[in-house]
Length: 381
Image (cartoon, rainbow, N blue to C red; front, side):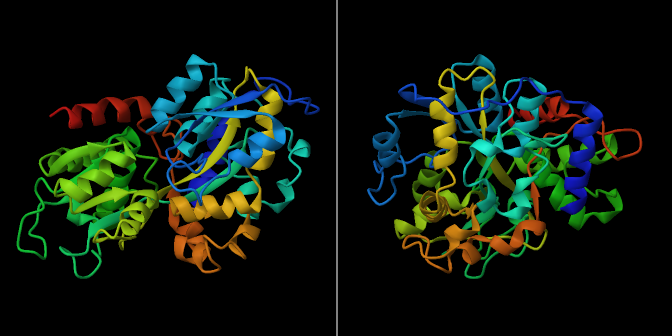
């Protein structure tokens, strides 16, 4: 993981990404609303469960009405931000530098973020939101992409991602064909790369986001074979939940969010991080370069680091807070929650980032545009 971070920092320097504009110097009166593009489950106002509400009090305190547009993939987030009209986005690492390079987000004046000092030190200068010492967002939450599985089929947690990549007979005596899923997003190529990095070391993959042509071709071949096993490619978290409950899905890469909701519904679902490790996400709240409501946006950025919000969100989503103080004294998360959600696994996760042609691999790497094209072809088979 440290190698990935170093490579990403180098990438930003090579790319020479310039600031879109100067950071704001002060926060003025709220404009009455703030429009946020967010992952499902990230901005809750108690409509699904009254215990999880970090919007209502903010609206009363600031007068800024929170409007949320959920997005199911990073590509969708980038498209929405390119279209404009939004103030903030909870961007993962495979979107954040694209937004910076495209000058769609503005620098953040961290002196206006009163609780910046409470952030996890591992996130303060993270290269997915910091370019040439300039911050383009406020860390929100992070976590792994887990392997969700049906506990009636798997009495013991699967030890390898092979259960979704290779055709095999599962412990219940039936094939996995048609009973597994894969993520509907080109960044999933990295999951295949991580699997081959551990299971086929002769390929020489050192970083699942830096693939030369031969390595990339091997991963795409793996995903083409996987296509014969996949019953559905998922991107809607709620649809995946229904698929586990009603459509016979027994194993899939997933987010802790779906697993938490399924477990709360007393479904026979659990999750694990297999021996090969996991990709993951470290999400940053970023402000549009032309945010219509910048004052309310800054007020939300400050609110987003509130320890109560951070702990409640981590309990709801199954993620890890960006504010370590949230790990203690939260009734919903409990004092064991951060450890359960993987607080100590930071260095074991290959966090999402956008692949580029410029990388540390001799001869260069396959860029995201080719990941996108090849993966769409795989899914359309």
